[in-house]
Image 1 (cartoon, rainbow, N blue to C red):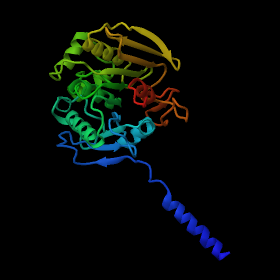
Image 2 (image 1 turned 135 degrees about the vertical axis):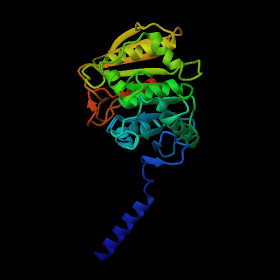
Image 3 (image 1 turned 60 degrees about the vertical axis):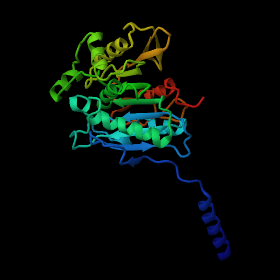
Image 4 (image 1 turned 90 degrees about the vertical axis):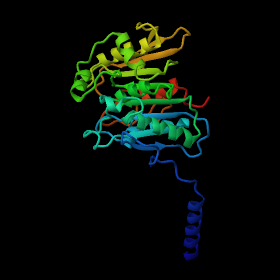
Length: 318
Protein backbone atom coordinates (compact mmCIF):
# COMPACT_ATOMS: atom_id res chain seq x y z
CA UNK A 1 0.00 0.00 0.00
CA UNK A 2 2.80 2.40 0.90
CA UNK A 3 4.48 1.78 -2.47
CA UNK A 4 1.19 2.40 -4.21
CA UNK A 5 0.74 5.71 -2.41
CA UNK A 6 4.29 6.76 -3.26
CA UNK A 7 3.70 5.79 -6.88
CA UNK A 8 0.47 7.82 -7.07
CA UNK A 9 2.16 10.80 -5.45
CA UNK A 10 5.00 10.58 -7.97
CA UNK A 11 2.55 10.40 -10.87
CA UNK A 12 0.68 13.43 -9.53
CA UNK A 13 3.91 15.38 -9.21
CA UNK A 14 4.94 14.47 -12.75
CA UNK A 15 1.52 15.43 -14.06
CA UNK A 16 1.75 18.79 -12.33
CA UNK A 17 5.20 19.32 -13.75
CA UNK A 18 3.96 18.53 -17.24
CA UNK A 19 0.96 20.88 -16.99
CA UNK A 20 0.78 23.83 -19.39
CA UNK A 21 2.11 27.18 -18.27
CA UNK A 22 -0.38 29.25 -16.29
CA UNK A 23 -2.82 31.41 -18.25
CA UNK A 24 -2.10 35.07 -18.85
CA UNK A 25 -2.99 37.52 -16.11
CA UNK A 26 -3.54 41.25 -15.85
CA UNK A 27 -0.17 42.79 -15.04
CA UNK A 28 1.00 46.28 -14.26
CA UNK A 29 3.41 47.93 -16.68
CA UNK A 30 5.82 50.63 -15.53
CA UNK A 31 8.23 52.70 -17.55
CA UNK A 32 5.92 52.99 -20.56
CA UNK A 33 6.75 56.66 -21.06
CA UNK A 34 7.04 60.07 -19.42
CA UNK A 35 3.46 59.68 -18.13
CA UNK A 36 2.55 63.37 -17.73
CA UNK A 37 -0.96 62.42 -16.56
CA UNK A 38 0.42 60.25 -13.70
CA UNK A 39 -1.79 57.29 -14.61
CA UNK A 40 -1.12 53.62 -14.02
CA UNK A 41 -0.94 51.10 -16.86
CA UNK A 42 -2.20 47.54 -16.72
CA UNK A 43 -2.17 45.07 -19.58
CA UNK A 44 -3.69 41.73 -20.48
CA UNK A 45 -1.84 39.91 -23.26
CA UNK A 46 -2.83 36.31 -24.04
CA UNK A 47 0.00 33.79 -23.91
CA UNK A 48 1.49 33.04 -27.32
CA UNK A 49 -0.16 36.05 -28.96
CA UNK A 50 0.81 36.28 -32.61
CA UNK A 51 2.27 39.44 -34.11
CA UNK A 52 0.01 41.73 -36.09
CA UNK A 53 -2.99 41.44 -33.79
CA UNK A 54 -5.16 44.37 -32.62
CA UNK A 55 -4.91 46.49 -29.46
CA UNK A 56 -7.92 47.60 -27.41
CA UNK A 57 -7.78 50.28 -24.71
CA UNK A 58 -10.57 49.99 -22.10
CA UNK A 59 -11.14 52.89 -19.70
CA UNK A 60 -12.96 52.32 -16.41
CA UNK A 61 -15.61 54.56 -14.90
CA UNK A 62 -15.58 56.51 -11.65
CA UNK A 63 -15.01 54.47 -8.46
CA UNK A 64 -13.84 51.53 -10.61
CA UNK A 65 -10.35 50.22 -11.28
CA UNK A 66 -8.60 48.79 -14.31
CA UNK A 67 -8.78 45.08 -13.43
CA UNK A 68 -12.35 45.19 -12.18
CA UNK A 69 -13.61 46.95 -15.27
CA UNK A 70 -11.55 44.81 -17.63
CA UNK A 71 -13.00 41.64 -16.16
CA UNK A 72 -16.53 42.85 -15.44
CA UNK A 73 -17.08 44.41 -18.84
CA UNK A 74 -15.97 41.22 -20.59
CA UNK A 75 -12.92 42.70 -22.29
CA UNK A 76 -10.40 40.38 -20.60
CA UNK A 77 -12.41 37.32 -21.65
CA UNK A 78 -12.69 38.62 -25.21
CA UNK A 79 -8.97 39.41 -25.40
CA UNK A 80 -8.29 35.78 -24.56
CA UNK A 81 -10.95 34.40 -26.92
CA UNK A 82 -10.18 36.62 -29.90
CA UNK A 83 -6.45 37.10 -29.32
CA UNK A 84 -5.56 40.76 -28.89
CA UNK A 85 -3.70 42.98 -26.45
CA UNK A 86 -5.86 44.75 -23.88
CA UNK A 87 -4.54 47.97 -22.34
CA UNK A 88 -6.21 48.98 -19.08
CA UNK A 89 -5.27 52.49 -17.89
CA UNK A 90 -6.05 53.24 -14.26
CA UNK A 91 -6.78 56.57 -12.62
CA UNK A 92 -5.39 57.31 -9.16
CA UNK A 93 -7.07 59.00 -6.22
CA UNK A 94 -4.24 61.56 -6.24
CA UNK A 95 -5.49 62.76 -9.64
CA UNK A 96 -9.18 62.45 -8.89
CA UNK A 97 -10.69 61.57 -5.52
CA UNK A 98 -13.37 59.30 -7.04
CA UNK A 99 -10.92 57.87 -9.59
CA UNK A 100 -12.66 59.43 -12.58
CA UNK A 101 -10.57 60.14 -15.64
CA UNK A 102 -10.42 63.92 -15.99
CA UNK A 103 -12.30 64.22 -19.30
CA UNK A 104 -13.28 67.79 -18.33
CA UNK A 105 -9.84 69.25 -17.50
CA UNK A 106 -8.21 71.13 -20.36
CA UNK A 107 -4.72 70.08 -19.27
CA UNK A 108 -5.73 66.41 -19.44
CA UNK A 109 -7.55 66.46 -22.79
CA UNK A 110 -5.08 68.45 -24.88
CA UNK A 111 -2.84 66.55 -27.29
CA UNK A 112 0.65 66.08 -25.90
CA UNK A 113 -0.43 66.80 -22.33
CA UNK A 114 -1.78 65.15 -19.22
CA UNK A 115 -3.90 62.04 -19.20
CA UNK A 116 -4.50 61.77 -22.94
CA UNK A 117 -0.76 61.78 -23.59
CA UNK A 118 -0.21 59.14 -20.89
CA UNK A 119 -2.78 56.89 -22.56
CA UNK A 120 -1.22 57.52 -25.97
CA UNK A 121 2.15 56.47 -24.52
CA UNK A 122 0.56 53.25 -23.25
CA UNK A 123 -0.72 52.53 -26.76
CA UNK A 124 2.69 53.09 -28.31
CA UNK A 125 4.30 50.84 -25.70
CA UNK A 126 1.75 48.06 -26.29
CA UNK A 127 2.18 48.27 -30.07
CA UNK A 128 5.91 47.75 -29.73
CA UNK A 129 5.68 45.12 -26.99
CA UNK A 130 3.10 43.00 -28.85
CA UNK A 131 4.30 43.69 -32.40
CA UNK A 132 0.65 44.65 -32.90
CA UNK A 133 -1.02 46.12 -35.98
CA UNK A 134 -0.92 49.93 -35.65
CA UNK A 135 -3.93 50.25 -37.99
CA UNK A 136 -6.11 48.18 -35.64
CA UNK A 137 -6.11 50.07 -32.37
CA UNK A 138 -9.40 50.81 -30.62
CA UNK A 139 -10.49 52.63 -27.47
CA UNK A 140 -13.61 52.32 -25.35
CA UNK A 141 -14.78 53.29 -21.89
CA UNK A 142 -17.65 53.79 -19.48
CA UNK A 143 -18.91 57.10 -18.07
CA UNK A 144 -15.81 59.20 -17.30
CA UNK A 145 -13.96 56.54 -19.28
CA UNK A 146 -16.45 57.19 -22.07
CA UNK A 147 -15.74 60.90 -21.89
CA UNK A 148 -12.03 60.13 -22.04
CA UNK A 149 -12.67 57.79 -24.99
CA UNK A 150 -14.14 60.73 -26.91
CA UNK A 151 -11.12 62.79 -25.87
CA UNK A 152 -8.70 60.14 -27.16
CA UNK A 153 -10.52 59.94 -30.50
CA UNK A 154 -10.40 63.72 -30.82
CA UNK A 155 -6.81 64.34 -29.69
CA UNK A 156 -5.18 61.22 -31.20
CA UNK A 157 -7.34 60.26 -34.21
CA UNK A 158 -4.15 59.10 -35.91
CA UNK A 159 -3.75 56.35 -33.28
CA UNK A 160 -7.25 54.86 -33.34
CA UNK A 161 -9.32 53.12 -35.99
CA UNK A 162 -12.45 53.32 -33.85
CA UNK A 163 -13.96 53.89 -30.46
CA UNK A 164 -16.88 52.87 -28.27
CA UNK A 165 -18.35 55.52 -25.96
CA UNK A 166 -20.55 54.02 -23.22
CA UNK A 167 -22.63 56.50 -21.19
CA UNK A 168 -20.10 59.17 -22.11
CA UNK A 169 -19.86 62.79 -23.16
CA UNK A 170 -18.94 64.72 -26.31
CA UNK A 171 -15.39 65.96 -26.59
CA UNK A 172 -14.98 69.55 -25.42
CA UNK A 173 -18.24 69.60 -23.50
CA UNK A 174 -16.64 70.90 -20.30
CA UNK A 175 -13.50 72.66 -19.11
CA UNK A 176 -14.01 72.53 -15.33
CA UNK A 177 -15.57 70.35 -12.63
CA UNK A 178 -18.60 72.64 -12.32
CA UNK A 179 -19.07 72.64 -16.08
CA UNK A 180 -18.80 68.86 -16.14
CA UNK A 181 -21.95 68.44 -14.07
CA UNK A 182 -23.93 70.55 -16.53
CA UNK A 183 -22.65 68.37 -19.36
CA UNK A 184 -23.61 65.22 -17.55
CA UNK A 185 -27.10 66.41 -16.70
CA UNK A 186 -29.10 67.85 -18.42
CA UNK A 187 -26.40 68.06 -21.14
CA UNK A 188 -25.43 70.80 -23.56
CA UNK A 189 -27.11 71.43 -26.89
CA UNK A 190 -24.68 72.65 -29.57
CA UNK A 191 -24.96 72.44 -33.33
CA UNK A 192 -23.20 69.59 -35.13
CA UNK A 193 -20.73 72.06 -36.62
CA UNK A 194 -19.95 73.54 -33.21
CA UNK A 195 -19.27 70.10 -31.78
CA UNK A 196 -17.21 69.04 -34.79
CA UNK A 197 -15.10 72.19 -34.58
CA UNK A 198 -13.92 71.11 -31.12
CA UNK A 199 -12.68 67.79 -32.51
CA UNK A 200 -10.97 69.35 -35.52
CA UNK A 201 -9.22 71.89 -33.29
CA UNK A 202 -7.82 69.13 -31.06
CA UNK A 203 -5.16 68.07 -33.57
CA UNK A 204 -3.86 68.82 -37.04
CA UNK A 205 -5.28 65.55 -38.35
CA UNK A 206 -7.52 65.74 -41.42
CA UNK A 207 -8.77 62.16 -41.70
CA UNK A 208 -9.81 59.50 -42.27
CA UNK A 209 -11.52 59.74 -38.89
CA UNK A 210 -12.12 56.91 -36.43
CA UNK A 211 -15.48 55.18 -36.39
CA UNK A 212 -17.60 55.72 -33.28
CA UNK A 213 -20.11 53.45 -31.54
CA UNK A 214 -22.26 55.24 -28.93
CA UNK A 215 -24.05 53.33 -26.15
CA UNK A 216 -26.56 54.88 -23.76
CA UNK A 217 -29.21 53.75 -21.28
CA UNK A 218 -32.53 55.53 -21.71
CA UNK A 219 -33.05 55.63 -17.92
CA UNK A 220 -29.61 57.02 -17.09
CA UNK A 221 -29.93 59.82 -14.53
CA UNK A 222 -26.17 60.31 -14.14
CA UNK A 223 -25.29 61.02 -17.77
CA UNK A 224 -28.38 62.30 -19.56
CA UNK A 225 -29.48 60.33 -22.65
CA UNK A 226 -29.35 63.65 -24.55
CA UNK A 227 -25.58 63.20 -24.63
CA UNK A 228 -25.97 60.35 -27.09
CA UNK A 229 -27.64 62.73 -29.52
CA UNK A 230 -24.89 65.32 -29.04
CA UNK A 231 -22.21 62.69 -29.65
CA UNK A 232 -23.99 61.71 -32.86
CA UNK A 233 -24.06 65.36 -33.90
CA UNK A 234 -20.36 65.71 -33.14
CA UNK A 235 -19.09 62.66 -34.97
CA UNK A 236 -21.43 62.68 -37.97
CA UNK A 237 -20.34 66.27 -38.58
CA UNK A 238 -16.68 65.28 -38.23
CA UNK A 239 -17.28 62.60 -40.86
CA UNK A 240 -19.22 65.04 -43.01
CA UNK A 241 -22.42 62.99 -43.11
CA UNK A 242 -26.08 63.51 -42.25
CA UNK A 243 -27.36 63.36 -38.68
CA UNK A 244 -30.26 61.26 -39.98
CA UNK A 245 -29.62 57.51 -39.66
CA UNK A 246 -28.90 55.57 -42.84
CA UNK A 247 -30.74 52.57 -41.35
CA UNK A 248 -32.32 51.45 -38.10
CA UNK A 249 -33.04 48.04 -36.60
CA UNK A 250 -33.05 46.32 -33.22
CA UNK A 251 -30.36 44.26 -31.50
CA UNK A 252 -31.51 42.04 -28.65
CA UNK A 253 -34.69 44.09 -28.71
CA UNK A 254 -32.93 47.47 -28.35
CA UNK A 255 -32.99 50.29 -30.94
CA UNK A 256 -29.86 50.43 -33.07
CA UNK A 257 -29.05 53.04 -35.72
CA UNK A 258 -26.22 53.29 -38.25
CA UNK A 259 -24.85 56.30 -40.08
CA UNK A 260 -22.95 55.54 -43.27
CA UNK A 261 -20.52 57.59 -45.33
CA UNK A 262 -20.62 58.02 -49.10
CA UNK A 263 -18.88 54.68 -49.60
CA UNK A 264 -21.56 52.88 -47.58
CA UNK A 265 -19.30 52.21 -44.60
CA UNK A 266 -20.83 52.55 -41.12
CA UNK A 267 -18.82 55.28 -39.40
CA UNK A 268 -21.19 56.13 -36.52
CA UNK A 269 -23.69 53.88 -34.76
CA UNK A 270 -25.88 54.08 -31.67
CA UNK A 271 -27.39 51.61 -29.23
CA UNK A 272 -30.19 52.93 -27.00
CA UNK A 273 -30.63 50.42 -24.16
CA UNK A 274 -34.27 50.83 -23.17
CA UNK A 275 -34.79 51.13 -19.41
CA UNK A 276 -31.09 50.82 -18.54
CA UNK A 277 -29.58 53.14 -15.96
CA UNK A 278 -25.98 54.28 -15.71
CA UNK A 279 -23.56 51.50 -16.57
CA UNK A 280 -21.93 49.10 -19.00
CA UNK A 281 -24.23 46.63 -20.80
CA UNK A 282 -23.19 43.04 -20.12
CA UNK A 283 -24.68 39.61 -20.78
CA UNK A 284 -23.13 37.03 -18.42
CA UNK A 285 -22.99 33.48 -19.68
CA UNK A 286 -21.06 31.02 -21.79
CA UNK A 287 -22.76 31.59 -25.12
CA UNK A 288 -20.76 32.76 -28.12
CA UNK A 289 -22.23 36.27 -27.96
CA UNK A 290 -22.20 36.57 -24.18
CA UNK A 291 -19.63 38.24 -21.95
CA UNK A 292 -19.20 40.24 -18.78
CA UNK A 293 -20.10 39.95 -15.12
CA UNK A 294 -22.97 41.82 -13.47
CA UNK A 295 -22.06 44.24 -10.69
CA UNK A 296 -22.00 47.91 -9.79
CA UNK A 297 -22.30 49.85 -13.06
CA UNK A 298 -22.08 46.54 -14.95
CA UNK A 299 -25.68 45.93 -15.91
CA UNK A 300 -27.08 42.64 -17.17
CA UNK A 301 -29.34 43.66 -20.07
CA UNK A 302 -28.88 40.52 -22.19
CA UNK A 303 -26.52 42.37 -24.52
CA UNK A 304 -22.76 42.60 -24.06
CA UNK A 305 -21.40 45.86 -25.44
CA UNK A 306 -17.84 44.52 -25.51
CA UNK A 307 -18.85 41.61 -27.74
CA UNK A 308 -20.75 43.83 -30.17
CA UNK A 309 -17.78 46.20 -30.37
CA UNK A 310 -15.44 43.25 -30.91
CA UNK A 311 -17.46 42.03 -33.88
CA UNK A 312 -17.87 45.48 -35.44
CA UNK A 313 -14.10 46.00 -35.12
CA UNK A 314 -13.41 42.52 -36.58
CA UNK A 315 -11.27 41.53 -33.59
CA UNK A 316 -11.95 37.83 -34.02
CA UNK A 317 -9.63 36.13 -36.50
CA UNK A 318 -11.22 35.41 -39.85
